Image 1 (cartoon, one colour):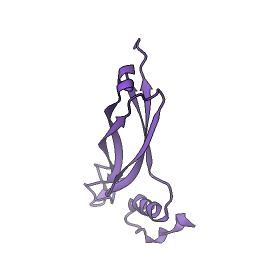
Image 2 (tube, rainbow, N blue to C red):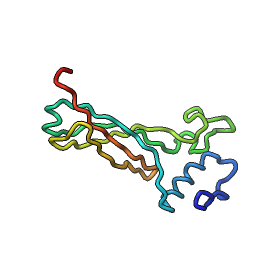
Image 3 (cartoon, rainbow, N blue to C red):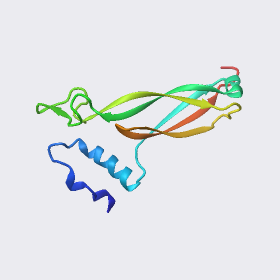
Image 4 (spheres, helix red, strand yellow):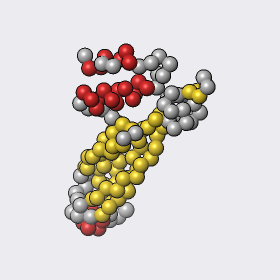
Amino acid sequence: MPHECFADEIAIDFPSVGRVVERMRDAFLGEVGGDVHCAEVLLSKREAFDGLIVPVEVPIRATCPECGGRGETWAEPCDDCGGTGESVFRHAVRVSVPPGVADGARFRFRVTSPDAAAVRVEVRVAIRSSAA
């Protein structure tokens, strides 16, 4: 059973490492996991015709820098992460939208970091009507 793998390796006094161990298990065993972030890019007809590069902010979960992922400092819940051991950071990604993109087109990719779980990103293109 892959979900029980490494279960006995998590120290009782570090409950917040459970997600880290899950990420390692997923990466090691090849299980599909990670957060999914959906975004919509609103373009004019001209922008869709010409193509362009648009910024998209992706939330990335990482170990809380204040408590080091423990979720507490000196037996008190960590104020920065609310006791979860994780912090969410915004990461700017530049998405290249090709010329002639159609309304409803979707782009899928992953944002990876050595210090955080991979985030799967899906960007949907919406083209404004000329009346808007």
